[in-house]
Image (cartoon, rainbow, N blue to C red; front, side):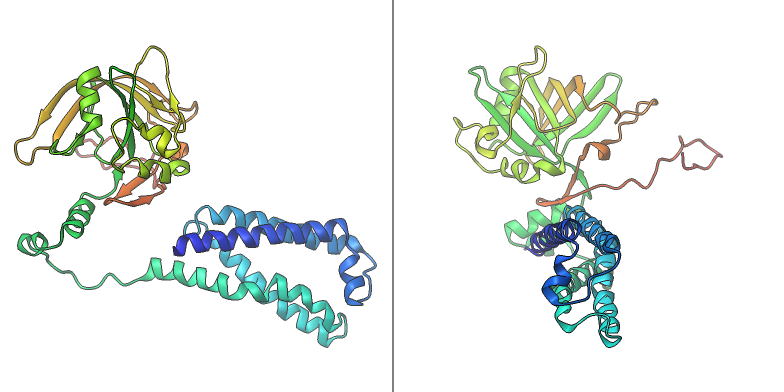
Length: 343
């Protein structure tokens, strides 16, 4: 809710700045006429102010996509909204501007102090919140958590995980889409990939479709389709396709029968190798062979490395926390007696 409020506030500030700046650029004298202030000799200077304010508006719109990531834009904007009234106060004391001209300061600066300050405070809290002393939670203790808390706790311990959509169809053409956070690399030669499906104590359409058709697709979730992808975890009736129910589009590429997600940017056609039911807890290990990879040109480097962050691929922590990625860099191939270097 806080993040949504931040986004709405920044979008509002961005739109306002662009409109106000455009007004000043197109009608540079109107603000002075309405307030009774002396008209400037060089209105082009005032138009430049309008351009700067409009550019700030574009910055706020960019910051709204990820306030935590783009906090420097918000900080610079907040400082401008604090310093602007100080500049007006000095000009008012010097007799340059009449008090009535200050209505610009009210709407451009004063009304944004609290929301911008609160956004920066929340960002500061998220980065500076103390971790607290180390604690130990025993098996006996977390076993006594209620079902939802225990699942959330244990699910978070494996760290950041990939977020993918598994696309399948049955022999009758009924499609299915399911989000998973357990896709993992199994080998490069042959190119094998795997993921986990929960026990079949209830109906598992993805599992049944894979067993039936021997084909499925793996589609990276990107930040533009997070909500739609998350919704595919809901338990829909067998005859309802999650594609349609969740607002995602089917895509068929080549002769592959299983549906891809049109809205995904990195996707794989995979043929089933085998299904293993693990006796320890009844989950199913799905092992598949990668047949085709579809991805945007430019994300694969000459050495084969795929920069998935450039395609907007996101990851997940626990059951419901989605995160953007920011690379720290790549390290050289590890060899004995030779330390790695950044490449």
